[in-house]
Length: 132
Image: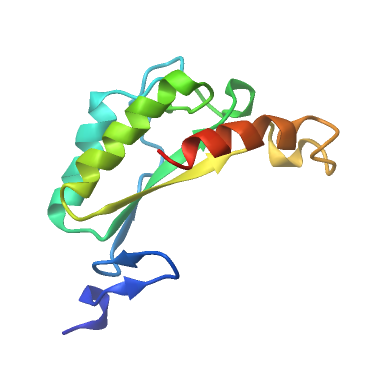
């Protein structure tokens, strides 16, 4: 079997193959941050096709940290059920979901992440998102 179709093992995760999909610039979520069925259906297209893992486009943990509108955020607890549902639906096809969490402020804004509140803003949101 070609190596690309063999499982890929990490410390706490085994992915069924080495094919990963990254959702680059898919602006189909609601303008103000909530995810929607359009994103779920988009990610499911790739999960059904057999990819081993899907890495969602950036997920801002603060509205102040988002780069553009129409990307699903996780800046409040009400957003967690959407991400859980997306993960559940993708898992139905033996595909692992993942997200890239964006900082609360653009990283280039200051070299001191404590001075502008980035760490303090990101930590609680990341803790809430991890179980999702």
